[in-house]
Image (cartoon, rainbow, N blue to C red; front, side, top):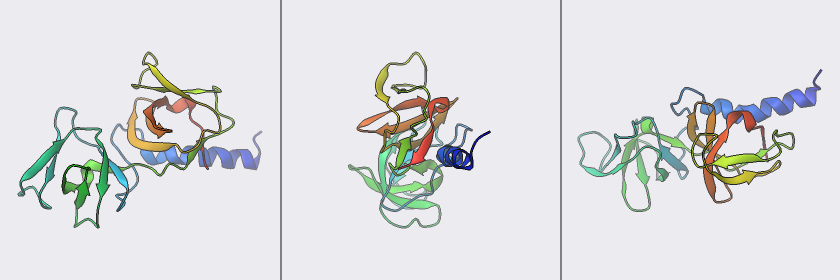
Length: 172
């Protein structure tokens, strides 16, 4: 029998994962002015058009591939179109194709099993291990990507994939 505190810890731990969803499409935090966003909901071979103005009738400034992060929403969106910058270009993107990166406030629970979570280059057990996240590791941001039981995260300068079954978060 689990204590009330244990149940609360589990609910808090899995809430961030529930935000992301498991359909393969991003269901992330809403668009946030000033926050980092990533390109989502486009096919890997079909880049997203960054446009001069808010609408498909405007000239394309550049094309952004799926999984491009580092996009900052600069001001309030106009309907479904948001003004963004990527450090090189400024323009407009449709909000369906961007998702906010979570704030880096997540920590691995001290109850995490296994004792060190492998951060991998790709969502596969056979992929190269980039780093190991130990229990109580904090400053973890959830990126808006989840693939077949894997979640993409960023922590301590590393960005990679961890098994959902290895994650047990609490807010730090």
